[in-house]
Image (cartoon, rainbow, N blue to C red; front, side):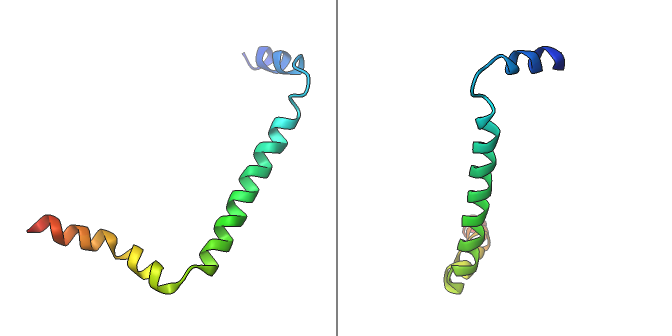
Length: 61
């Protein structure tokens, strides 16, 4: 099965760029996420972290 897929993909021209593009997208996403985590305001993080607790209080009433 793997030999069939490998042989089929080798016959497609220009396919070698797709792994590079996906790696670049993956890397850029996590760099942006890392940047956002360190620049986010503490008040926003506190508010968002308390959302599950606030929702639980409302459902008990």
